[in-house]
Image (tube, rainbow, N blue to C red; front, side, top):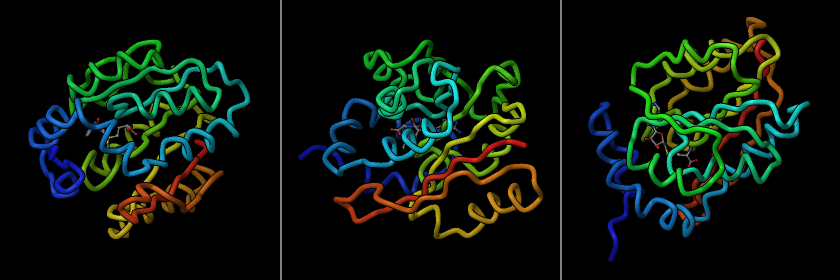
Length: 204
Ligand SMILES: C[S@@+](CC[C@H](N)C(=O)[O-])C[C@H]1O[C@@H](n2cnc3c(N)ncnc32)[C@H](O)[C@@H]1O
């Protein structure tokens, strides 16, 4: 019986433990997520594409993993996608998808400041929250966008249990620093009875 990483990913903590888990998971990630009905990439990608005026504009797929999110962004009609991730093994899998203009390994504390203003949109699909990147990443990604830029992301049920994630989104929208374009609760991993909320924000 193959190892089930979904049984342990939500308990992972710390940078090296996180990287090691995704390195080990890379070869079986697509099969395991596929058999659980992973629906969040297609939902998020469609929500983002519906608000992109120019579908050839550059999109950063942050925490691109094996490229399921990049493939979903492409299937939604977006054509210029760069991927970044902290796991070499996940990136090696993403290479084979043919969905990306370029793929780069980044560090956990990388603020990506050299990429500021380069993207019409940033996507963080299945990346922020339990089992992956901390909430601090949220503001780093918003900082990459010019006014009018779009940020598409998802929080799964495990992440939504911690109210600070949704509260952080509200801070951005309540202060007028961002406009909420999409907030949609729906299937994440149906085989595990897990849902996610998909958001699209516009940077003001
Ligand atoms: C659940 S996977 C999602 C991958 C892909 N977006 C998808 O939808 O299949 C989470 C990814 O986030 C990456 N990750 C975890 N922490 C990160 C961080 N602090 N910065 C960037 N990527 C991170 C992991 O290496 C992993 O590839």
